[in-house]
Amino acid sequence: MRKLVYYIASTLDGFIAGPDGADPSGPGGFWPIPGDYLRHLAGEYPETLPGPARDALSITAEGTHFDTVVEGRKSYEIGLAAGIPDAFPHLRHLVFSTTLTEAPAPAVELVAGDPVAKVRELKQEDGKDIWLVGGGELAGALYTEIDRLIIKLGPLTIGTGIPLFGRTAAFDPRIWNLTDHTVLDSGAAFLTYTRS
Ligand SMILES: NC(=O)c1ccc[n+]([C@@H]2O[C@H](COP(=O)([O-])OP(=O)(O)OC[C@H]3O[C@@H](n4cnc5c(N)ncnc54)[C@H](OP(=O)(O)O)[C@@H]3O)[C@@H](O)[C@H]2O)c1
Image 1: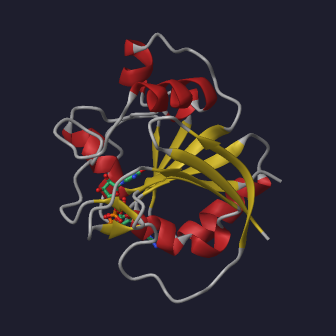
Image 2: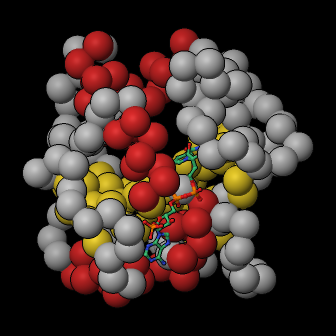
């Protein structure tokens, strides 16, 4: 059965974004994107780069991990505000929202219902794994459904911000097995953990 994978960039202190909810790796963002990091993303996870970045880097590879991406409305709206209504046209793209009433791009599927029920349904379908892009609030809602974590650990701390599982996640300790890791010269580490 296909897996739900939370593939996410985190600071050393467990934040995925600053307190303002902006894109930390976008223009003017504080997240370092060194050359070896970008090369690793492009080589190993080409499907996770947004369409415009893939075009700029002439990437056409399908990727081997994911064919579906699920994201929360606030994360989705960052691309929308930048004039990109579907950042992942090469993937099936679902956005969870109870407030958006019309999908801004024809291929984007809005889901107003329970994310857990929808993800369980997706897991029953054939295909590659499902990428949970974030943000923290949606990841908190899907916490019990996550089969694998791929943490792109950045060599930075920020003190406060949006935590990996959002600001309202319940206390629910889980143990994860480290199943893969890559450490880059620039200081970022890609850590893959599978639910034990
Ligand atoms: N570091 C990274 O790799 C990474 C990746 C992605 C995003 N981010 C960052 O994450 C931040 C946004 O995260 P966030 O936690 O504020 O918001 P988010 O999870 O992206 O979106 C929250 C919204 O998703 C919908 N949603 C969440 N849980 C739901 C549920 N149980 N049922 C139905 N809809 C649900 C709701 O939309 P409605 O209000 O419309 O109902 C909710 O307001 C941004 O700063 C972004 O840059 C970072």
